[in-house]
Amino acid sequence: MSSTVSISELQDQAPQGVKRAEQNGSVAVCRHGRTVAFVVSRERMEAILETLEIMADESAMRSIRDYESGRIKPKAFEPDEPGFMPPAGWRGRG
Image 1 (spheres, rainbow, N blue to C red):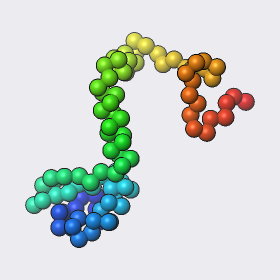
Image 2 (cartoon, rainbow, N blue to C red):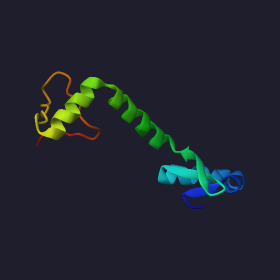
Image 3 (cartoon, rainbow, N blue to C red):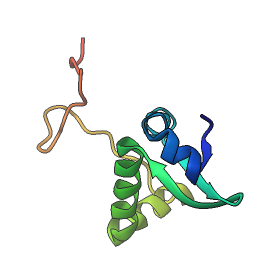
């Protein structure tokens, strides 16, 4: 099953279509050669929702534009600063 399927192919092979979406992020569903829908993996949908939340946050978007234009530089957080959240698997210095 490719990343584009017809509605009838999806009806006949729904489990494979969902698995393909999980593996590739999405599968386009076509009717008469025209894309009419998508099957989207949970991971891809969560990323889309997170992106939309960031785009709706005026302060976050302003910071991103300022960084991209070179007006600001990213600030490094130190482990002893309040609010520091170490990434998963972080072992500290040394």
